[in-house]
Image (tube, rainbow, N blue to C red; front, top):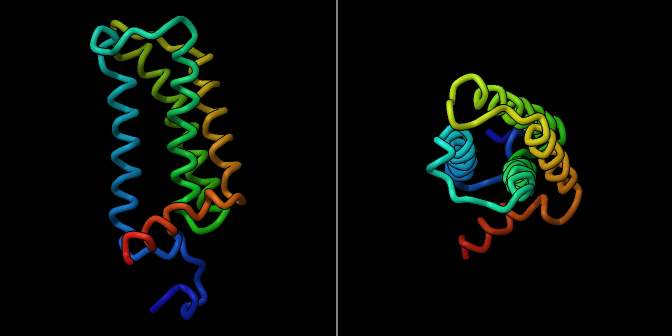
Length: 139
């Protein structure tokens, strides 16, 4: 029974393989968590200030993917709030749980701005990109 016949609004977009798309998003989040908590010596060196671009871009991708995954603005907003909380929480964890990393409010801000930028892609054609990709693979 589909969401249309039950009167409930669907949480995810209409996918043939919803588990695959959600698993990819969860793996992306796992990669960000790992990268945020791994020892600084295990990470490549970047020019001063470029890490803010990495933070912004990483969270933009996570948020844009959530926009492509969730069917409505409410689900997208909940995902965005969760990603902002994750970004802030990981910054706190870096300061509390690691010896080679430090909490940085500028990183948390870059994370949050990336999430908001990704959320803004919802009403654009990019919002339907995953549905289009899945349709392309079905052919």
